[in-house]
Amino acid sequence: MLQGLEIWEEHGARIERTNPVFGPGIAERFEWASSLVISDHVQAFMKREAVRKRLSEWLGEDGLLVIPTAPGPPPLRGLPENELNERRARTMKLTCIAGLGGLPQITVPLPAKNGEPLGLSFIAGCKQDLKLLAWTEKHVLSPQV
Image 1 (cartoon, rainbow, N blue to C red):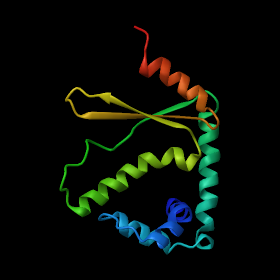
Image 2: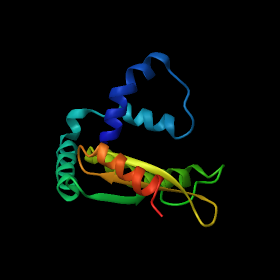
Image 3: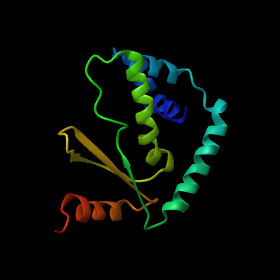
Image 4: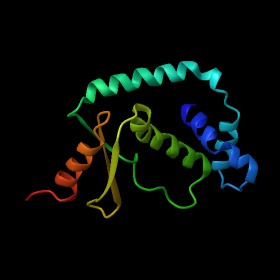
């Protein structure tokens, strides 16, 4: 809900003004976002604040959350719409953490043993952007041998 509200607030006027053509799934999500009303979702904003507080306390200034960037290998071209939507929902459960928490996140593509791409995401505490960048540079991008 919150993402839909924020997306429509940011892009709604331009979409209404220019009436762009979107691909399958995207058009429907923008249509849904256009129907949302902020005052109907006050509870969601309150819940987000509670989540932000909890994540901030949990990670502090030195914590690091490491998660996969996606719930599995890249989807195959031509995947049926219902499977694509299910995949999108599973991906959002991972990718929403930093945004919901107002936290910095870095996603790093890494080679996997089977040759398929693998992405790891590193999430740090609130206002720890520079520390996260330095940690990633030191430990992930150019680790000491």
